[in-house]
Length: 238
Ligand code: ATP
Ligand code: TYD
Image (cartoon, rainbow, N blue to C red):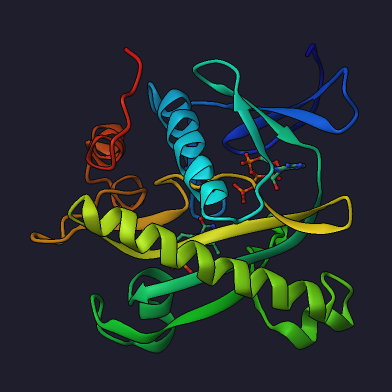
């Protein structure tokens, strides 16, 4: 497999074509952003940590029967994935109230959500990733109802697998965002799962171990990401 030209540079990853039209290389960079790109910083080792973390999670999800775009890890910061037509709708599940939900509804941070909630956001930086719903997605052609149903089903399957994994590591999976795409007509999990796109708290102290450390300027961002990884059995390269 040969890496060819850069197709797209996002806020945290760069995407490259390969000599195989069905495969792409995702390069995880150290660049970190929050608040629609208003806060930006390069955090040493973040590309490596998120690439290794994501590879581990995607393999666990595949083992659990969830179709993912992940093929293999190529290097410390690069992974090979299936080239997909991405669906511009982000799926968010919340097990515990935090972040945007607390701001929007004024509910108490830390409240257990029973049953867990499911929300949709439009992937559109210029519009600030607004919250949408199934009706808007269908009318504006962002996703078809049957695609949304499959995305919801897979997003909750991921919750089942990952809640258990993080619980075993002494952590709470508070919330997370997933992106899906279409490969050979099938809905497949894409993008990444890492502490950049979820909230994880220590189960005893409720200390934040995710990107909120960056958002809130708490420091120790990558140290926390690596600690999360170690607790679920990841050995990060030096
Ligand atoms: P955001 O940070 O809001 O997710 P971004 O575009 O800045 O947006 P990056 O993670 O920096 O995000 O860039 C990676 C890009 O690659 C995203 O646009 C993502 O949707 C896209 N992508 C992820 N997996 C695949 C795939 N298998 N095929 C095609 N594109 C993909
Ligand atoms: P949310 O609380 O709605 O937004 P914010 O993190 O801006 O307060 O986010 C819920 C979870 O989904 C959180 O773990 C972050 C993740 N997420 C993203 O990573 N990107 C996104 O564009 C969105 C909408 C959420």
